[in-house]
Length: 454
Image 1 (cartoon, rainbow, N blue to C red):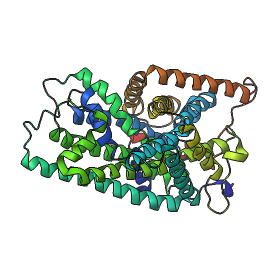
Image 2: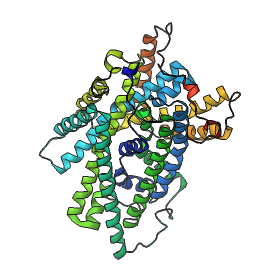
Image 3: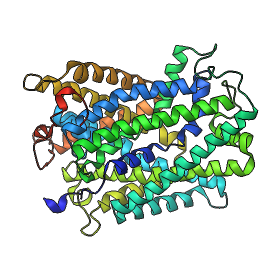
Image 4: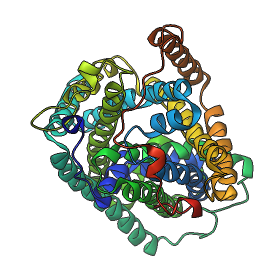
């Protein structure tokens, strides 16, 4: 029904902006020290490897988004290609990711703000951050888009300023080598690939743009392009910034790897500049909070609309703002959970759902090929080989998670199996299906057989 549909108001630029804000461009400044230590001083190469690795999965997301131009992301793709029960479990797994990511974003933001303004406790910043982003998202996607763009551009501007100041510093402090940051005597393939699993975390969220399909103009073309652009642009930023930082501080010897961006800012620009660098992280964090909550609420809305979650609560849109207000309030309420968790604990288990979803989407492309190979001219390299490589990579990333994250993620998955059994009355009832305006299989663009995103 029309009143149950989100209005289409987002173009390609807006969708890409949401994806980049979700990833937070300044995150590379925070992760640089950790990645440099793990890769023995080859952070730029590590970020480049992570970019290339995740592009395999990004192309799979683009392929599925072109064929199924609706919200729901991996949840929708898995239901259509792997079957309703498996689709439900994929949706349940990424619910762990999407439901808790806003909480992690607010917690990270609150820690940064508390460091800048220690007189205000972290719990108070949690309430402020959750309240502000929830209010903006409830007001409507147009306002959220405008605020998000302003925050994103400010964040990128401060990252560019950081790079420029570093370059001026390098004029007077010539690096001993311009190639050591890429590969040096201490670098090994094992170290770089292991560090790439960490660097890949900085890309989490690029898939979230697929949840905006119902609000995008011409989603069959906009969403696939946005997925690829977000990964590519993010990869360029991460590789470029990390290379400049590696020239300023080569090697992998850091007293505090997590805080290297602050100390490097002091080194190249002084105290005032270091404060501005910290501001970049805060601004990026606000934009990320906004984008994370928006995409999370859309997934809850789609699952509520399908009856997987209570429809009366999650599957309703506000008549005036045309936003899923109750889903937004549910994600906003997660800030109370975050008050009782450490950042390490909070971030430890959400990646389980993300990597599981990435693997499922790659397998969905293969399943689509097997189902339609006789009726459509599908390229076996694009629809089988590349997705299988992507699935292998994401399974490797999943295996690199901490044992606690694997335990919590597995427990959540088992809980989902129990809920599915109850929901279907021990599979005597069908798993709730998506209600689409058209058959998704008929929505495939004419360019699908060639393999290029629409």
